[in-house]
Image (cartoon, rainbow, N blue to C red; front, top):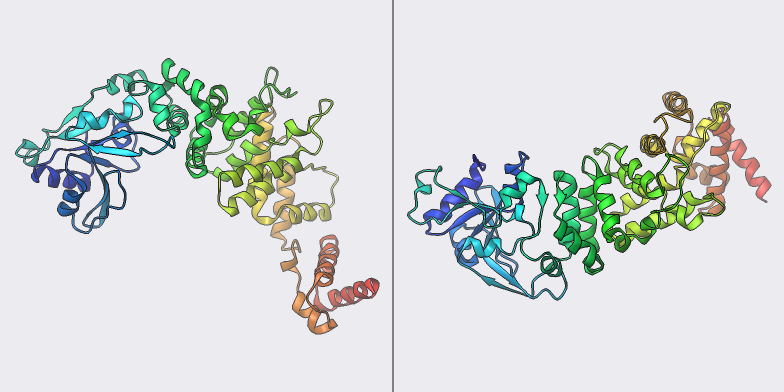
Length: 453
């Protein structure tokens, strides 16, 4: 089995070996190599204690109690962790006590899943690796290779204990099964179902990171369905979980949750904001259902979506954009619209959000069993493009005058009245772009001011 870590990783291993220490590549990086994926990073484990790692790698940093050193090697930094066993998890996330160990087998026993409980390296010292890189061996005490071949995600040891130690492992199991296209072993899956309530103990940031990685998968629906089936979804978002079983007259046999996950899959993984909006676009439907209809679910859904994202402490810009997309995803278009109607649509949505809103609607159509461009979407897109190309007035900033002009010319002061007049001018210009010249706008502003008085 050929394993070829990059040069900086080999150099770090050889420095540890030459120093008389065992050192191994471990965890997800090794798993990714074995399934033919490019590792995002490489983690090393060693019997060297943190102070010894700091000695071997000058300029390194050690700022935790878990034995993990950010080791400096020329211009590279690698995480090197001392072999350890973990004890007592009061917060269901981090061990209260760690005990450093001397063998790689002890270290691998604390890992989450068998496919991550693999190591490649050597006991070091005078061993051949210093002179011969072919000498390192693969260490697999929990049949991780067998589970890789079976495409199976299985907990190391007793899954209930593994998840009591760290509840995030349950969310990670769902995400890894999705991104690796693995099944979750029956006992491991049963333990997740039995202990999903422990997810409530996790920090918002940890949950958010796993949700974001899940949404970046090729088919997020796999993981989203697993989250729902195991009870994790009900802990993270009761509002989304309430979609299960709710009738949806779109694809025969589908409920609202089926529609949601189909919609998520229909968005490109290159567009994470739109995928998040797709996940949340109908979050308001359970709360607004009456007589088979969901009146106002877009507005209610925007509020619920914002609350969900705030709970996960997502960036403000993401929250604002996704909330905006959810609020506007039910837009309707009629070919009978005149150009002013198209301009008002652009003004309401905003130039920057148009492409994302169109993709969300396309995905919503596909998730409903329709053509992506149903509801004359292509025609609207073409008309929007024509208006944008014509450089017509669409926003306040497109007017040839601004608030400072009104203050200087009409003696206005800062305040609500100034904003109302600018909005009135924008309304006029959306209807008739030819009025967007200084003298005409000032006359209209003067008339509006007279009406206010």
